[in-house]
Structure formats: structure tokens, C-alpha cells
Length: 278
Ligand SMILES: [Zn+2]
Ligand SMILES: [Zn+2]
Picture 1 (cartoon, rainbow, N blue to C red):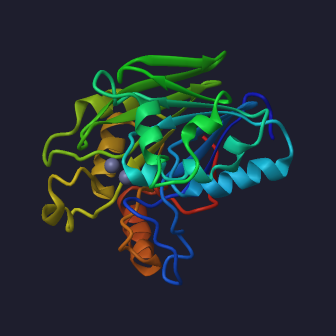
Picture 2 (cartoon, helix red, strand yellow):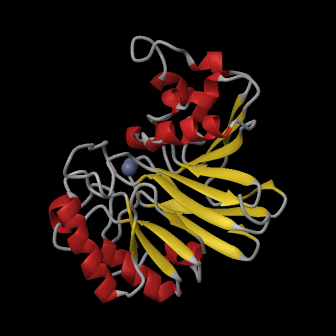
């Protein structure tokens, strides 16, 4: 752990839709969305896909009491399915606060996650995790101040059933987490532009390439090229290509990395285990 003012990001899952382990995805990784963001002594987690399992094991191995806030972009399965396998949920004394901004007023996070962990889908009911796991629904667009010196601005994304984009601010640094979202070709998303304005780092839904996108219109996802356009328009520092299509193997991802680097030098393609500091 670094200085109290440090912000660091570690990627535990970088895929969209479904985990895709195998020999062709070992370098970029096969786990679904899960990103650790350290703000000084505080640990924030963005999404709880399959990458959350390994993060949980690493936290337990560190041997310290665990106190985390997990912010969901939304509750599609690839972003929540790691929770039942997040071992800190089952070890007494840990504090785990779960947040979501896309469900009110028709639904609530606890109800949705309860449904995922209900028989006959899963043997351990979520009620067994109480009281060390708490659930907070907020209205997307709200500003959250979960701890002194840590602020999250939120905004709506364009995705079936809704999703929340986040901008995390700490110690003069800013990291935007923007997934899952679909762009409208030819018109930059004004809500996203406002949220990511001059962010040091923007992690962006880059499921497709621009060439692939027309065959997937209305599926709720964007492209790395749209990430470049947004990053340029908003004056973002580093663009991080994220939420890779499970059909994109390592060779294909290498091609995206090369193309993105020549299009906007310094662009990073997320891979499991990668650490970034704004
Ligand atoms: Zn997704
Ligand atoms: Zn989704």
C-alpha cells in the first residue's frame, strides 16, 4: 500500500458478456468485469464479475480486516456473478457495502442479488451474508461521498435496463469507469462527456470495433474508436480499452492495441493483472 494520497487501479476482469478462459485468451484474460481502485487506504471495487473471486482471495490472503465499497455499473449477469464466490462475504468481521444507481424506483439491489442467489439457482441465500453486507440504491446522477476525500460523480449510460457511469475523484486525481454503454454514431454522448471531462483515466466499453459495430447495433455496447473520440473531445488523459468481446482472442486484442496506439498514443488495452496509476 502506498502513500495515503495514492490512487491505483488493478484489473481483475476485463471481459464483457461471459467469461472466456482458454489458451487463446491467457494474455488479456478471460474473467468478466472487476476493477480494484485504491484511494489511499480505501478500497473501491467497480463491478463484481468473475474477476471478483480472485480479488477476494487476494484480500483474504493479505490477512487484514476487509472493508470495501463495491459499485455496480448495472446488474447484468456478467457484472454480478462473482459475488457468490467473493469469499470475504462469508468470513465474519468484514464490511462490504454494495451500491447501484440504475434500479430505483422499480427495483432494489438487494432484491436483484437475492434473486441471483436463490434456490434452485444457488445453494446459499444472500440472507446468510447479513449483516456484514449492506445494499445501497441511489439515483443515477447523484454525487456520492462514501468516505472523506473520496467523491464519486455518476451519470446515466445508454444500455438495456440502464447502467451507471462513475467518475471517482481522490487527491486531485480522477478515474472514469464507463461500461456498459452504446454510442449513437455521429453524436458524442453529452452525459458521458460531462462525466469524463479532463479525467486522468477513462475506462471505456470497447466491446466492438467500429467495423463490427453495425452488426451489433442496439446491443448496448460501444467501440474503442468511440472511446478515442470521447477521450479527445473531453481532454481525457489515458483511455483504457475495456469490456472486451469474449470472441476477441489475444491475437485480435494485439491488433486493437496496435491500432489504438497509432490512433491515440498512450491508449491502454486492459488486461488482467495490469496496474495503472493516474
Ligand atoms: Zn457487460
Ligand atoms: Zn450489460
